[in-house]
Length: 158
Image (tube, rainbow, N blue to C red; front, side, top):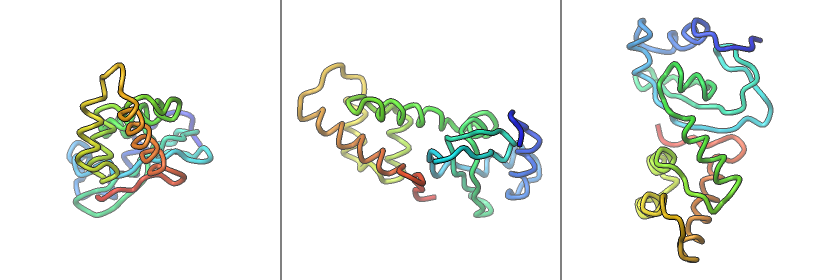
């Protein structure tokens, strides 16, 4: 087990699951479909250990799926899962806080939030004070998001 990020090792893992042979083309085949926090530290395909923030990615061209660490998704695949994990940590610590725009979009696309809830989150995201009804709705939405990622994470539509 390594303790760092090994780009070559990640490429050896991702390329066989892709149609393209060139990394620059292969990464465009992949999309983020799910996130979760591991109960126990695991090793990323790049060799980094320990990782807790796990991202499920899906290849649209081949249908293959795999899990990689949050940092590899951001650093090598260019997907900003770190912003979603940041929002999850913030609402877990304080359920009165708002989700960020990336988390709102992610959970709306995966049908955790409906259209109205997504709009509500966007419209109240930067408000400093909410009515008691708005605050109650925000708490309900935040709890649903936390429940959705739950034990094994959220695996939305691909």
